[in-house]
Amino acid sequence: MKSKYIALLLILCFFAFLLSGCDEGHTVDQFSYIVALGIDKGESHKIKLSLQFAIPSGSESTSGSSQSANSVVHSVECSSIEEGINLMNNYVGKPINLAHCKVVVFSEKVAVEGLSPHIYTLTNSIQMRPIANIIVSRCPASDYIENAKSPLEELSARYYESIFTSTEQTGYIVTASLSDFFYSLNDTTKQPIAVLGDVNYLHTDNTENTSSSESNKYKAGQTPINSDNSIENSGIAVFKEDKLVGELDNIQTMCFSMVTNTLNKAIITIPNPFDNSETIDLQITRNNPTQSIVSTLSTNPYIEVNLQLSAQILSMTEDSVYLRAENLPRLEEAVNSYLEKNTSEFLYKTSKEYHSDITGFAKEAIKNFWTWDKWESYNWHENYENAVFKVRASTNIRSGRLFTDS
Image 1 (tube, helix red, strand yellow):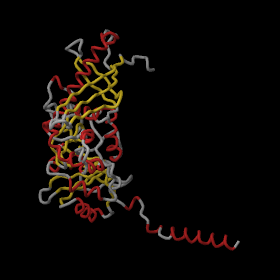
Image 2: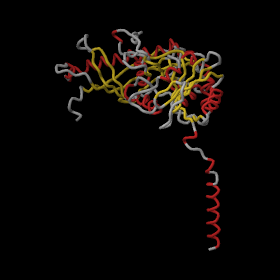
Image 3: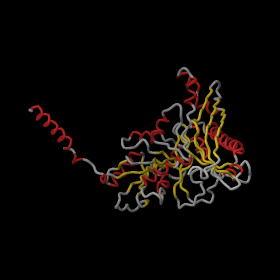
Image 4: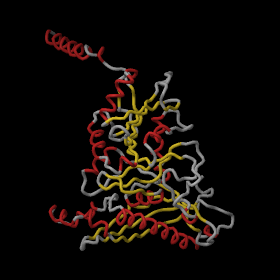
């Protein structure tokens, strides 16, 4: 019995010790939570840091700042991210907390000079979540953040989260987390990428760089959407090491997702092989994982990419000839041709123009070498610009749902 009393006393002392520091704990209201960071080139200092603060329910925003109903944006010119946060800490009073930061937005002007110092700083932060997405904005990062609003989402944090769920439906953007970018910077087999963003300013030339035959190819800020200065994300920002070297449009981004086996589903619009004046909409999904074979017998890598997809016709009319089973092979051939053409253009653009292996073909190439020294002497990232691609697509088409799926 005496031993039981001693054990009970020890347990009580243990819990008393744990509870003794509770009065020093912090509540939610004691912090200023950041939902987005924006980094531009500064005028009087190295960078201009923009912070989007979440406004607690029932609070009023501070005057003299850009704001929406549930957030407020403050900016400060500074020499580094940490200095800017420290200055802003002194201004807002409450300690700034980055634990709920959803996106980090870099302007193109910052990205072309290199993101390595900023990425390492953010990765080193114990508050910053590795799943925060990296966005490269074609407009100033501060403008992007200030226009980040939607009538369909009340909270800014939820809005940023909803942006990246669209990749599962369209394939027009990718997820590009802070941790992915950091690991790519330190990976010899893959170059970093980021989401391409912009503000839709209702330009009359939103369809710039597109033609009538390619009217469905857009980058962020180019889509013909009638919206009141809201942000849009479409395409990929391509990096070589830590520097921005180019951009991909929405269709090229979809091709990237097919090659890297991250495509869930997407809708494509192709010329109607039975009527040149019409188009056909199809929803594509992966049938089997994409297979990539890399040969390094010469300094011109030969890369075969085999796409295996399923498609379902969305465009329907009463007299649609492609509803007939005997016409499906011709339509499948048209779909395969469309996918092979666009995927090849995407691959040659990254190799010939950007010299950047963002798809990670090096992971297959490295298997051809017995030693690390031989792999390094091959100079993959230099030889990649000489790569020759062969893309094969195999698509199995269903004629359409009609009422068969109900």
